[in-house]
Amino acid sequence: MVVGGLVVAGLVLTAASASAETTHVVALARSVEDVLNNIRNWLMGILALLATVFLTIGGTRYVVANGDPSEVEKAKQAFKSAGFGYGLAALAPLVVEILKGIVGG
Image (tube, rainbow, N blue to C red; front, top):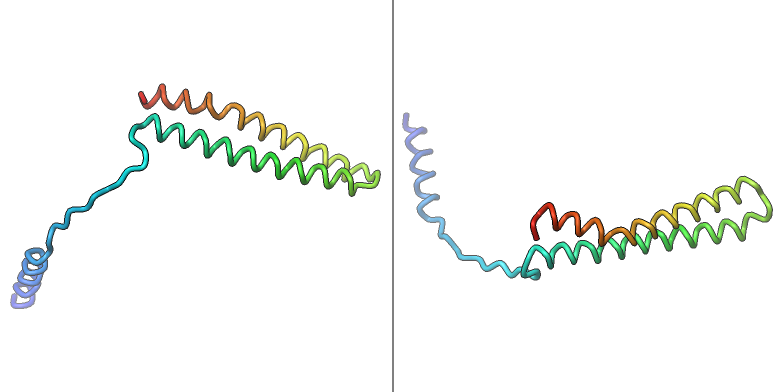
């Protein structure tokens, strides 16, 4: 009984001593459209960067392959992956427009 009373008193005292501080949130984007445009830009940049990495890997493998058919096939696969990445980067604005339609931005 005494322990329960002390627990309740402790909770009341800690709740009473908590002060409500006001926090100011500074948003960098002013609207949902700005957020979606930022997403589009980041998405395009990341996809183009990854595609460039795959293109570089494919080119290096192709040069180093020295006629080895399995290495040439791996290089071709890297070129295909790079093309796929560039294609997705080109489609990123379309994806963001679809998101704008869904969100209503």
